[in-house]
Length: 317
Image (cartoon, rainbow, N blue to C red; front, side, top):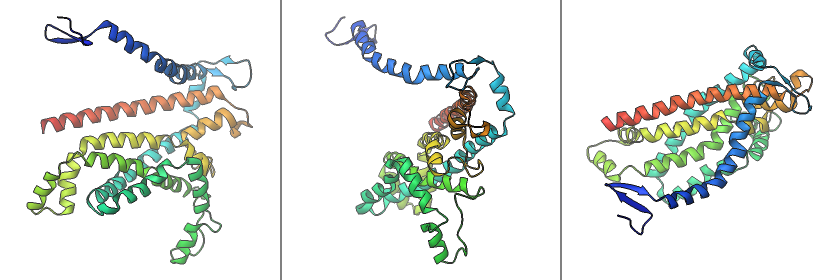
């Protein structure tokens, strides 16, 4: 029977009236236009440009087919940058996730009076502009009167200043550390939100049974937060795969390409390209971006599969 509401019940099923659906589609049009202009169109054009030999400046371009991709397969700079991006993710993600979890557990259970202040302090670097963080941290780790070197010399750990950003063996790890420090706050917020879903009665029962804090963490908190952990790891890994801003602000991919992640490689190839006498290669850079996009899509599919597997295992438990 028709009703005055926007939902009809037909043979036990709820059905939205066509007029309501029309309004929903109309309200979706602005978002669809923006998504088409700034997401789908650039994505399609990137694939198209990847088949061209084009500087991005000249009017003429040459269709070269798969030549850009074939050249990338033998480009050591590309594979080096590709590998460093995944090293950045593989090293930064577990450190950031575990550190944020420990901080969240501490702030959730301890020093409740000061928890708001501590949460703000940990979250403050997250909302700070990346360019500002990069400039400040470049000074902090400077070999010339940098606070870190001065502190290490004062406590007797080192005798001579360490060139954190000028040494190819140390620069990448320094940038990873800064990235973790900057983004640990947002991961902490994710964990705090997850911890709020754990009933306090569980902890009270665990304490009655004689479980200590470490046992509560490992045998109660972690298993209950496992589904949330998968999502948090996915978000953190995605963030650590896209580190163009912090790398560009601190090292610009140097020294000697030691911190050149794939996004910096794409940017420098498309707009700077010092490796070819300063001639930009937008088509070649687009091919590199497309290959990296396919790789990240494959990782996203693996993560989605892992999330579903965890959900199934939890439901059976």
